[in-house]
Amino acid sequence: MTIKTWPEAARRLIGVAAGREPADTVIRNGRWVNVHSGEIIEATDIAIAEGRFAYCGPDASAMIGPDTRVIDANGRYLVPGLCDAHMHVESGMLTVGEFVRAVLPHGTTSMFIDPHEIANVLGLAGVKLMHDEAVLQPINVYVQMPSCAPSAPGLETTGFEITPDDVAQAMAWPQIIGLGEMMNFPGVANADPKMLGEIAATQNAGKTVGGHYASPDLGSAFHAYVAGGPADDHEGTREEDAIARVRQGMRAMLRLGSAWYDVKSQITAVTEKGLDASNFILCTDDSHSGTLVNEGHMNRVVRHAIECGASPMLAIQMATINTARHFGLERELGSITPGRRADLILTSDLETLPVELVLARGVVAAEQGVCTVERVAFDYPKTARDTVKLGRALVSVDFDIHAPKGADIVTANVIGMVENQAPTRALQVELPVRDCLVRGDRDRDVCQIALVERHRATGGVVNGFVSGFGYKGACAVASTVAHDSHHMIVVGTSKENMAEAANRLAAVGGGICVFKDGKEIALVELPIAGLMSDEPAEIVAEKAQRMVDAMAECGCTLNNAYMQHSLLALVVIPELRISDLGLVDVRKFEFVELFA
Image (cartoon, rainbow, N blue to C red; front, side, top):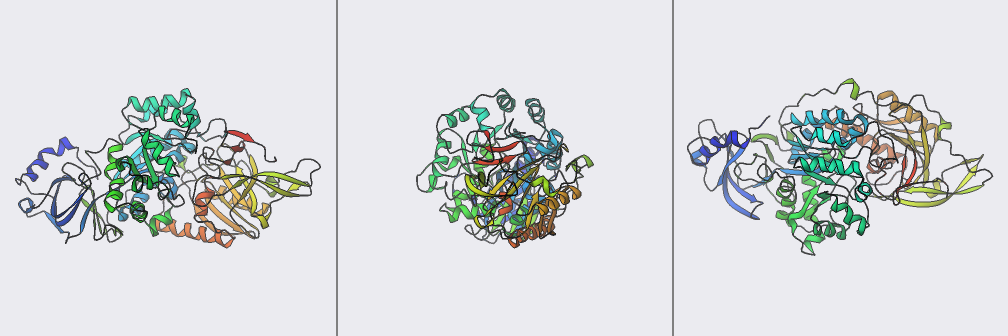
């Protein structure tokens, strides 16, 4: 539903607050979690009109008319609707509308999405599609204009590129809240004109520049990056990362996604070092559909922050008012106070945070875990569905890795997985040569990885090695979700299975599939840009769970291994990655040979 602006609603809000007019809804006898004052105020009534809070105080009885809906809180806590400050809808493998339906029962009523993934596949047109779907939603879905497609120019090839002119054009769209994460941190630190042009277009529009500094180096490169304008960062993994960012005037975004567990290691900057918590924000970044359906969304992050030592009030502030302030929306979102949008959770316990009732813009949107608002129809055109273009059928020899002439053994540069974190390790492993081809080594957990070009039908395949998945037997996992350029990543122990998996995804228009012993044992179809399904979240989650189980059947023991599989081509996070142009040492932002 659309919501009136404050000027449009002001007369009615004043009339209700004064007791001259009846409210649309009154919630009685609640415990008001006031994120402005840091108090919990007993025996509070809340009156709502025009989708906004009109009154928050001890007695709203004068505001109850014959048509007013009255909800008895029965002493439960009144918590502001939760905000996800940085996230990628595409990581849920869902459309915007289906993602909203999945997270509403968990109390998320505001999302700040960066459609960076679809931008790499479809460019500005793809971003506009997701923006237009966001406008239709019953909750607040703000869009950050993607900044880096490609994320590392010269090191990868995307389907489309984003330019400063694109950014300037998008700044005029109604739901654009700022610039998405500025991933090309070397470009900013070196004053690259294109990156500075995008930042300037955003700041000229008075909007927020998102950050992404994925390096442990807090020296001159970090200081140069901060001077370039990014206002926040979610890539910290250590306490010193969070401290450094807030000291430089940035907001430290602490993330808990499906595979990223970066809250515990950083929240000690507040809970133990005593830094001002107002500059700390919670977010998810990436959550797949299984996590959303089975574990939760921002309520999961808040619970986790509490488990890590934050008080319930502090954790809630980091997921509500701190986020609203950061994006200049304090008068619209993030608190239960007059004039703000009436986004609210009823819960009986602040620590475990069971979400029992959700109001979004004054409407009951979810109750006892069930979404109660109607699905919003939005059609993605054929141009968004015909995006997997291999140019030819792949065969096993496409995955051959030829040894240097005369070699019996080689030392290979191998991508090493790090469980529950986005960074990888740059390993060097001796591998055997047979029939002039270099093989993986299952006993040492080294298998093959390939990056298959899928945007321009070049038929290109770049091969390498990866360690950490634990695959046994003959198997392969292929995915067209391959941050950030979103070609196709294929990881496997069998070249035949790798070819079969790649061809299968080309046939269905994208997604994830698992092959074992020459047979398909799991498939998640993602026909929209090779990234998203328009099926309901529950169905996608069921298919995704089958995919996770299939990876385990192949021997994988990593937590949320698929999320880490999808990042193996992310050439802006150290240490070693693969792109359609070769193997990339992200510590130096240079290509590196496969064999040392």
